[in-house]
Amino acid sequence: MKHITFHLDFISPYAYLAFEALPLALQGLGYSTEYRPLLFAGLLRHHGQLGPAELPGKRDWTYRQVLWQAEAAGIPLAMPATHPFNPLPLLRLALACGEGGRINRYVAETVFRHVWRGGADAADRARLAALQQALAPRRDPASEEVKGELRANTDAAIAAGLFGVPTLSVDDKSFWGYDALPMLRACLEAHPWFGSGAWESAARLPSAVKRPARD
Image (cartoon, rainbow, N blue to C red; front, side):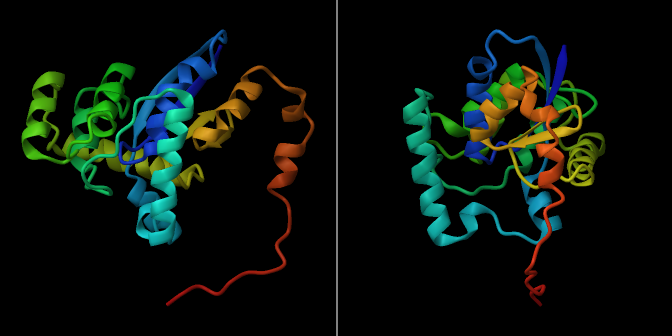
């Protein structure tokens, strides 16, 4: 049975969509899943990138696209009152409910739905306090242990070459984005394409142009 590592940040609507869609997308297959929260901003910082919501035109498109994708898939989604927001309290709360940098599906679902259903402020202090009371974490979300697990998850993702969320990893392959779920399913079904060398050759394609780094 294959094992999937689901790398996520609750700030990402695509991570929410992928989380909600995963059971149906992989229906009938045998697999196990672990959920690992990380700080998406840490990946962006490492790679010198801005997030989709930091570019005005891309921000508008991202929100329109995720609202449409949710509608098309029958997944309830309402944009939170403000976005982007600081996801650190949610990430630390989730990790405080788990162990070893992993959380279970119930915790992930509860936090995702706190953000992406109802249209309320995901970072509102009263709502965060109610969420923490509902989840009843076994550890203090503000502890150095929990903060260290978030840093470790983020650092491990960077070391593995991850650049965005959601990313779902199986063996030595990683699948980025909500729209990668059909490709992930094909991999789990041992589609012959994955043994053809196409996966490996894509990474060896030379580049003829490289833009200079910005100051």
